Structure formats: structure tokens, C-alpha cells
Image 1 (cartoon, rainbow, N blue to C red):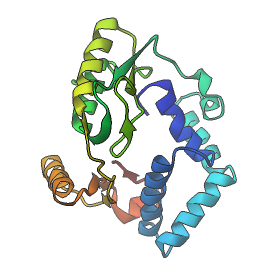
Image 2 (image 1 turned 30 degrees about the vertical axis):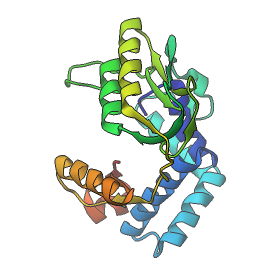
Image 3 (image 1 turned 180 degrees about the vertical axis):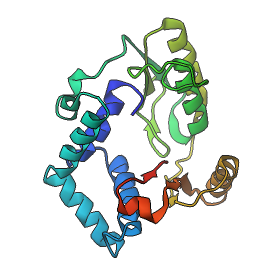
Length: 231
């Protein structure tokens, strides 16, 4: 997971049976569908129960250690995240007005992370695994003027300052609270531009959050534990 230390710790918390509620929910939702596709569970309820059991009995953490080791990484990070690198600079993104967070432009935040060094603009670009963002406020959250909306973790002052400005522009704060709305995960394979357009239309029409999460490899890959799902 690319991003600052705190963000990369969250998935580790999930496999240990803990973690933030929203990340746990999307993990179980995606994982349950993968188990159903592979024929390992007949219903979503049973699939979620299976995943929850694996999180709680240590199996999920054990499998993650195996995956990391197989790719030449240090499996100790699963239990000792301090082995992961940290950025040298932490800059707050401050709210200029109080109210409710009505929107966070995910595309803008994503592009800001690429400019910061957390992702690639070109295939030859190097990725800095220590930089990225921590978003303290999400849509529907109350925020006071002067309160931190997010944090930028950087290793370069100029890049960090540019990221602060860009993330600040990604936030919209209004006087009226907007509820988070329902979350819909689509496993079909459609063009990225079509997915973004559909997500924007659903958001505007009914406040629905729509995630494009195509599954690669098909049913045979799922059964062989070789398929991937990306959101």
C-alpha cells in the first residue's frame, strides 16, 4: 500500500482482526464476492463469516507474511510495522472555514499523491513508499475552522507544500451535512472514463458512492487463488 506510515498500518490492522470500520467493510465486501466467485462460499453471509474467522484466528496475517516473503519482502512488517520507512516532513491541511465536509475529490487527491512521489506519472519514475496522505475528515464529517482536514507526509519541502495546496482544493466544506450514502461495488470490466462518469452521475443523482473494482483472471483464477480485485 503506497502512502505514509499510518496509512500502510491500516491494512495490517485489518488482517489482525482490527482496523477502521470503513476499510474493514470494503475488505469484507470485496473478499466475500471473491469467495463466491471461486465457489468457496454459497452466500455473502457465509463468505463474510469465513473472512472474519480468518482475520480473528491469525490465518489472514499468516498468509500475508507468506505473500510478502514470496516477493522478497520482510514479513516482519506484518507484526512490527516500525520496520517500514517514514517520511521526514508532516504538514497539516487546514480547513479555512467551519461546516460539514460535502465532498473530497478522490481523483485530485490521487493526482496529488503522484506529484508527491507516492505513485508514478511514467513507468520509469521511482516510488517513495514513505510519502502520501492521511485524511482525517471524510464526507459527512463536521470540521471547525482551523482544524486539520488531512496530513501530507513528504520528504521534500516544495513538493509537500504543493501537495498541501492541492489536497486543500480537493475538499469542499458546506453549511449542510451530506450523509455518506450507500456504497456500491461493481466487479464488471468497463473503461475507466466510463466508470468515472457513472460514479459522478450516481453521486450527483442520489449521493451513492460507486467503486469500480474489476476482477482479473475469471472464475478459474479465483479458484486457483490467483485472481485480483482492484478498487
